[in-house]
Amino acid sequence: MSLAAYACHPAQSRGRRHAEPPAPTRDAFQRDRDRIVHSTAFRRLVYKTQVFLNHEGDLFRTRLTHSLEVAQLGRSIARALRLNEDLVEAIALAHDLGHTPFGHAGQDALNECMADHGGFEHNLQSLRVVDALEHRYPQYDGLNLSFETREGILKHCSRANAERLELAEPNGVAHRFLDRTQPGLEAQLCNLADAIAYNAHDIDDGVRSGLISVEQLAEVELFERYRREALSEYPDLQGRRVLYETIRRMLSAQVYDVIDATRAVLQALAPADADAVRHAPPVVAFSETMQAQSDELKRFLFRNLYRHPQVTQTTDQAQQVVRELFEAYLERSAEMPGSYAERRDRHRAVADYIAGMTDRFAMREHERLTGRRGIA
Image 1 (tube, rainbow, N blue to C red):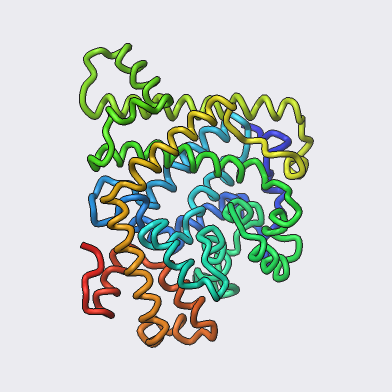
Image 2 (cartoon, one colour):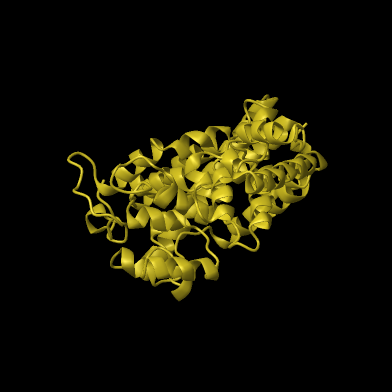
């Protein structure tokens, strides 16, 4: 399949921070994807929380399975829109590399600990991982990924951090947060595929956990419509098959909606190339109706799952673990590996070390350093 003119073409990439000869059998974005898959940070995602902590059940999503689902959805949409599937996959697989143990609870706790030292943003941390914290190659730190992949990884960025990144890399990946332009379509697509994936799998994991029920979900239009449709076609369907079929139909409907809505915008804009997209309003999006239904589902999950007392109790414990780890490593930096202990910026070194931990390693380290079990 030939790429559309507005797709990111590897031959037109803005390149890598450190120049390298091209690979004989792979283009730039395929090479990025392979480097990400072989990275240490990618392997750690299998033991990092999505919503439920890693030890709470073997079948709940982790950051790794979430990233794979985002990649699958992203590639399906990219193929229909004639975007670069390999770039979409690379961004999707790398977008959560900087996430802390214990999901957003860990991120919030680290941000609190780093409040007087530049804060902590998991998207910025993902960029730090691929730019500096992976140590795999003799010539440079990081994975030396292409500009377009790095652009997609940096999904959000505060103005203060964007200004700091701009000083180090003029007109680089943070520039768009200063001049209010857009990333390429592949990056825009990954942002939306991320939301589609976590809404669907959080329903699945929430029902599996017993914290939300199919009966509660009947109040959500996007869910109930496809549950009724599934039962109308298969009246004898029971148990988890009803849930699976409902979620499958929801996912398909959202994917087709994004494709149709984005095609309509592209037809109206007629962008000549990938750079033209960057100076246009956002292109990859739901229709207004689907966006409203997606927002309703997010609000439901926030009220009934993310703020469920059982989840918040675990969240509070996880945040305490992160705070106490941070304090312990600040006081006893020798407890960290030498590559962290020897750095001059102790606060950022501690944040980098904790952010790279898996859930279970963080819990073990907390117990070793404090003598207490931090999470029941």
